[in-house]
Image (cartoon, rainbow, N blue to C red):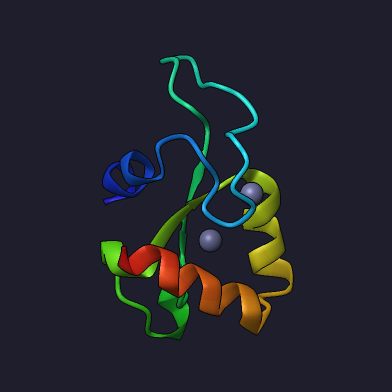
Length: 79
Ligand SMILES: [Zn+2]
Ligand SMILES: [Zn+2]
């Protein structure tokens, strides 16, 4: 699942739209998989509920979870 989500992102954070901050040892862009509706809140472990984020944006979503960002990511994930 996480691999599919990251592949779809093509190395670009799906929130700030900047390239991944670094490459992992395999030479793949480093992004983190995030569930838009958290699993803990009943979100589905499916591609349409997941996005690939840079570490900064991932922290931001877990710290603030701003409704505007959530709405934006939901749109992005549906594509
Ligand atoms: Zn980002
Ligand atoms: Zn997350």
